[in-house]
Length: 276
Ligand code: G1P
Image 1 (cartoon, rainbow, N blue to C red):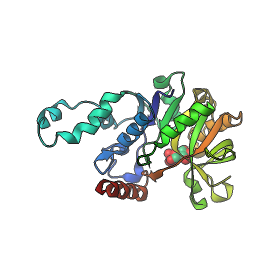
Image 2 (cartoon, protein in one colour):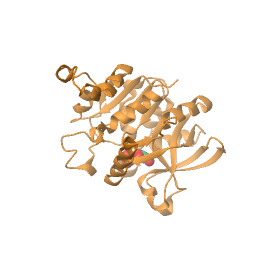
Image 3 (tube, rainbow, N blue to C red):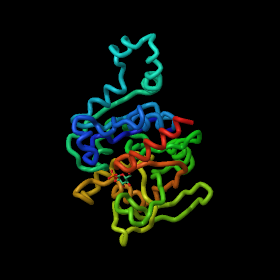
């Protein structure tokens, strides 16, 4: 079983300045709910009971959000506003939150390695909260991936087809379709943010991973890559060479809430949904 879900949440969110000057980007709301709460709810839906959050300086609002606010509870108890807190109360009651700080921003691989102390020696999920996924009444993307993990028992990355001229934004894979009905690829190569002429395909890695604990050693052995950062894509590549990584082309909507454009699309999507 996958019990723990890791959230790398130390990044600066520079694309949303000035909004993210004093507010963590993970706390930006789509409608009334912060991005990271969508991620935590997805992890709960997939059966996780421990949220391992890798934070950094200026991110304390995340910890406060997933804690009881006695003053607020007291003020609105018995009023018409009380139901507004019911969703977050349920989240807080159904799992535990653990935190560690990433002191320096040295890339996603480094952030995940920083979380090792919260994970230990077991397989775990990773959600990048700015990739917001929605699957309506169907199973969440992470739940679909947990099912695939039970079947294949190795690290899994979520995949989505993107236009070739957008491959420079993603980790891009090369792989062989090994199960057509489940949309599973055995990965042989991965490139972080390739130029269009260097992209091995148009299958991009989206911010959902299930990682076997062997990833930690792989990250430790990974040299800085693109941008001088320790890339999770490069560490996964080492496991892929041993045939230990698959990709799952998932079902569902996904919004890149790390960009203003994607954020606005997500807002419209969830607003229209809420009007139904
Ligand atoms: C990260 C990963 C990249 C992946 C992407 C998904 O990039 O490095 O491989 O495709 O997340 O959102 P970032 O968006 O953090 O630059």
